[in-house]
Length: 321
Length: 162
Image (cartoon, each protein chain N blue to C red):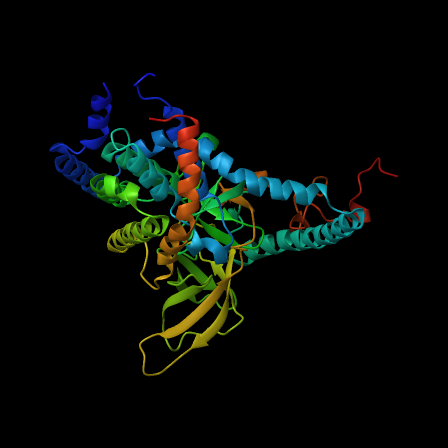
């Protein structure tokens, strides 16, 4: 009996070990090939995603705990200061929103496109970043929303300051998002000042930076210029802020200028992000508020007042004191 | 005294914890130093119970790691297969090694594993080779190995995993 046990532990190798290794090696190579070339392995990943989701949740507990501790053990003065700050920010943002609405209408009027106004429909899904890619060279993050929440591959992700990335792989309850700073990601952008178009590729180092590709020496770009998404790739909604140009180096001896930009989204710090569902929506004029009681000759200027703006006294309703 | 295999859940749990440690978010400066927890736990179990934890387990562990990381399927399996194979052929000698010698082997094996993974990533266009910082993980693994070895051996003996 004793010998039997020793036998079992001593001669596990047998003849089959090398063959087994070889078989598994072949299987692995085939699997890698299938996964990188064809898409049917995605279903395998998706199914395995159900099993592994708890691991993500548990891995996220330390971070959640830190945030919880930060939230609970905060002094009253800090809260009051933060509250005041937020209130001020909200006021500023609301004022800008009012301006924006009237500007958008004015813009569409100037472009003689009054029958169809382009607007960004605000259908968004808030999400949280719960993990990062373990490899510092891959700029991918994991968010806590997945196929069950309607997330799809290619969906745009933004934070409060600008474009962050697009959904790369969808799992049942989580998704991987490729950030715009990854070297495999290219964002179509345009300079806000003059509409010059360019392609912004993520940096090849660990730096959080974008390189503008194929910018000719004569293109008008300056350090400090704001880059907004041009909507060309059909992934990101148009006119969202993406980055700000940090440096422009134009050497006449080279084919293209070297332009570097820093993304506006808080890549390394933020935790709260939003996923955009509707990209660019065309809104027909019926849905726009039309002022009443002003007759058919409603002048353009009035009609284009933002709905938020206070009505002028002469427009007040008859029964209003 | 029964001779059947037992304590499957201990092995299972040790791998779950290794996965957690492998994907738990770290601050930016610490990311290259992350030890190869999964490789080390696998190495320990192959060394201790080569007739239970072997090539097949290594492969499965690697596939699950790939899905967790969102990397190409099979990427982590290849290195783990290699580790399991080398450990299985050396396991009798390995048990006689001092802690330092074992740590040296861990350094070599995790180093090879990291290198192999990195090459495959470069070949498949998932990353660019810009520095050798990723090799730091092998060094921290070797430093941590003696402690981890004691811990895992204590656990194995405590729960009588055979």
